Length: 275
View (tube, rainbow, N blue to C red):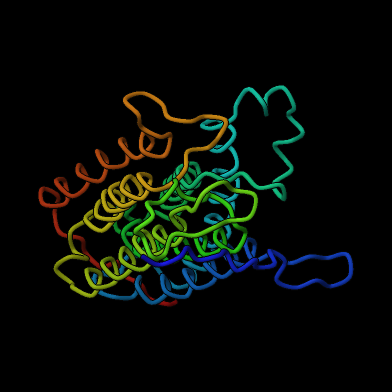
């Protein structure tokens, strides 16, 4: 039997420049958006071509707004609506934390719909390229959660060698942020990148989007078994957490997109004269 590990007490502030504090959590968002943008620029040029690099450049702003606005409103509506509706100015105080991946996903989906309509692009084809890189952001976000010492896991059994003691938390816990980093980030990103390398997969409109939605729903639901529910919510219907409940429609949508991808015509490349 091994003794528990002790949380290493990271400083959540990465860099302090006078009154300006750059936090690891903010840097995770920035790094994910920039790295995702660069990867999508490469993916859209693979056959079948679904957009230009300049269009990907334009979409970066849309995606950023979708992630931030959707993530914040999702947290407000899904997790603590009574609190925020009684104190509406708190909705703007994003520096105090409170972002929902499911809300951010809805925000990006809306951005994809509006963007692809504006530029007359294939929604599913462009979505397939974008969702391929989303796990990169998920992984970085979970690392930032670990640095902040937040979203800790449930009480771990004594035989677990990597159970962890967090500050101001009773009992040795599962480091659930690291579980999510590995499954939602590393594993899902690897799956998406390997699949995206095959032209036969890229030609199936919506297949990659479906794999991402279904894969994330399964992995997040599994990780929720080790993650402590939010204290203000606890367990909900049938002992599920809010994260697991929100994953149900994602899994259904993912399965539907995969099924539909075999029924739809193969994607054709856009005719692009200049990029």
